[in-house]
Length: 425
Image (cartoon, rainbow, N blue to C red):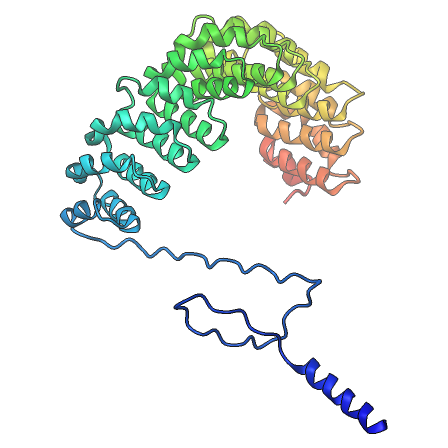
């Protein structure tokens, strides 16, 4: 019985060591070697093998005639590479336009995309392909639609049907294509403005914002959009008001309704809208004198960026405007907001001698940054700030090193002899 038990155990061990039968090969397939490792247990399904990434070889440089012939090759890979090779010839490849136009209906996505890219590289000489390129703006492939937008803007932006098609592409569900359409319409410029004005009124906020941004980027050539943008400055959505104010500023000074619209935007509840309005008025320059009073009021804005930009705008529009120094002086004395005081003190440095008294007062501000800025602004004014020599001399004994440095630097610019007597090196 003991021997039988041992034999049975040996048989069990031997059976356990046997490998499982290998799966049969498909007919005609070479015999597969047995796996070198033990297969995964049934409870743990084997990991799926990742397909090997296809390596696309570099497109060889070929004579144009050979590449044109390859555009009709039975192999889609060859057709794709032929289109890419044609693209390298640029405008000289006009002879390939007919064959490339045929490839726009190729069943392979990557072939269609390569053909579109090649036509775009050829440029205006590929004009006869425009109708099919417009059709491709509805292609199921995002990559093909993207290439079609770019190609149309390079080949014939003003050809019949192109501008409406690009305008429609603004609504493409893919953000990359929509952005490409914006860029294309911006490059086209003035002829695209009527379409962008219409798109700016679209119920889709994203489309509207992109259209308004494009109008601003077109600049002076988009002046006919000024009335619409002036209305958009009062839109219920803050994003639209910001974009519209920014676009109005970029359009330029000859838009009749520009200045009144930007003046109204200076009172917007959104600080970004106010800042864009100020920037727009600064871009207009001296022709925006009607905005001086509103800009002086803006010097009391609680947003430091708006205040700073308002000062710069006044410098460009009317540096000697009545009330500017007084408004900045009031801001420089606002005890509740140290940041506002520093911004106002920095701004006063742009107004010369009339700004010296409030700057001298600011030299004794409780905040280190304000004292440093007051000294810096006085130094910027230069010799006209001689009345500040005594106050700056006191700063040389300030507890803060940065204040002492700023005081010494200002003294050297205002009165070098006084600085030397004080031991400023």
